[in-house]
Image 1: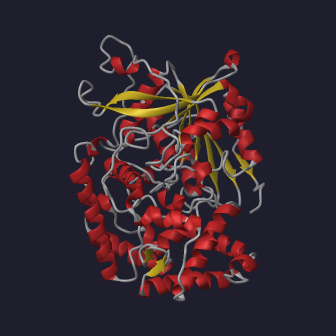
Image 2 (image 1 turned 120 degrees about the horizontal axis):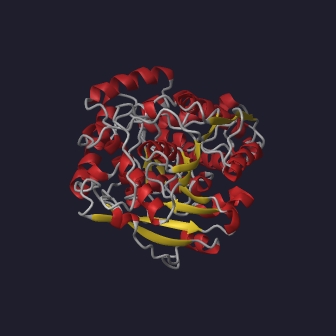
Image 3 (image 1 turned 45 degrees about the vertical axis):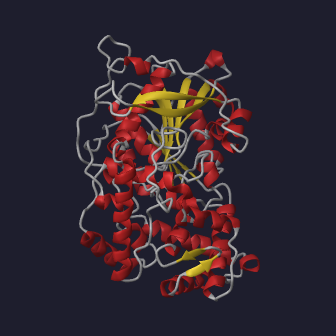
Length: 531
C-alpha cells in the first residue's frame, strides 16, 4: 500500500507481479493500516429469501464476454490468452437503498478445468486501495500450479476502480503522497495541496464519495459470490486486500472457505495514515538497496560502499531542497524526491533495485546541472506522480481511505508528528507523517468494522516488508489463533506468494489451497532467491 497509499499495489493493472519493476508501485501501495472503532458485524442474509432486498442482484445473469477492450488492451489480451472471460456485475450504489442507483463491478474468470475435483471460486484482490485486480487471474493461476485447475480464479476490480464504474476527481497527480519538505513553509504548501485535492473530489464526485468504502466493497464481493452461484468463496488478498478480506469475513460469516492474506494490514492500525510506523522498515530497505547498488558501481556509478551510495541519496535530497531538479519535462522538488525513493523500495529484486538505481543516477546528474532524459522506469514514476494520467487511481484510493475512517483535522497534529519523525529519519519521516486530503474530507457514513475474533486463514509476510510491516502479521496472528503464519525471512519484500519466488512460501500456500488444511504450526521460510 497494493498497497497505499497502495500501499501495496501498483498503479498499473495486473497485480503484484507487475509491481516488480515499477517504482511507482511503492507510492501506490498500500497505504496499509488498521481500524479500531467498533461496530456490530453485519449479519449475513440468506440470498434468494423472499425478504431479501438484494435478491435481484444475487440472482442476476452474468453476460460473459471477451476481456479485450481494443487493439491496445494488453491486459485483455493476456486474459484472453489464459482463457479468461469477463463480465459486469450490477450492484447498488447505496446498499441502504437497493432499489436506487446502480453501478457495475468488473470481473474476470478463468474456469476450473478439473471439474471432478473442483473446490470453488477463488476471488482475488491485489491491494491498493484502488488497485486493479481484473488482470491478475493469469499469473495467479500460474502460481497455483496444478491446484489452479480446481478453482475458478476470479479477478474483481473493486467499485470505482479500473473497469468498474469509475471515480475520477481530475487530479494533476496519481497519488496524494508527498514529503512535507524541510521547513514549515514547505509543509504549508502540502496543506494547501491536500485541501485542493479534497475540494476537487467533492466538486467532481461528491455524489458517490460516501459510498467508496471497504464495507461497500465487501458487500459487492458477496453479490459477486451469489451471482457466480457459489455458497462460499475462497479468497486471496494482498496488502490492503488483506484488510478487505478481514472485513468480508466479519460482515459475512460462514461465506468463506480457504483464505490467504499476504502482506498483512492490522485492523487496529487501518486508517488514512497507514504509512506511519513504516519508517524503520523503509530505512532498512534503503540500506539493502544501497548495498546492492554498491556491488554494481561499474553499472550505476553511485559508489562502492553503502555509505557512499547513501551519501549520493543525501546529496540529491539536499539539492532538490534548494532548487527543483529538471528531469526531462518534470521538476522534482523536495516534496516529490522522497516519494520517488520511497516508491522504489517495495520489491526486493534486481529489476526493482535497478529502476531505483537508474532514478538516483538521473537525479544526481540533474543535481549537477546536466540535462537528463529519465530512464523508462523513472519516467513512468514521474508521470504517475506529476501528471493527471493516473488521476483515477489516486482518486479512488483516497476516497476509500477517507470513506473508511476519519483523519485528524488540524494541520498542527501533522506538523508535530513530522518534526518528531524528522529527528529519527529526515528522508522518510516527513513522507509517512505528512498531511493528506482526508484531513479535509467529509466524515465517514459508517463506523469502521470491528474485525471478528478468529478465522482459520493462512497469513503470509516477509520480515522486512516496508509497506505492511511484519508486526502487522504478528498482530493478526494473535487475533486469529486458529490461523497460521508463513514468514519469509531476510527479504525486504511486499507481497510474497507468486511474486518473490520462494518455493517454500508458494508450496505452503498451494498445499493449503489444495487440501483446505492449514499447517500444524507457523512456518518460517529462509530467503531462497538472491537479489
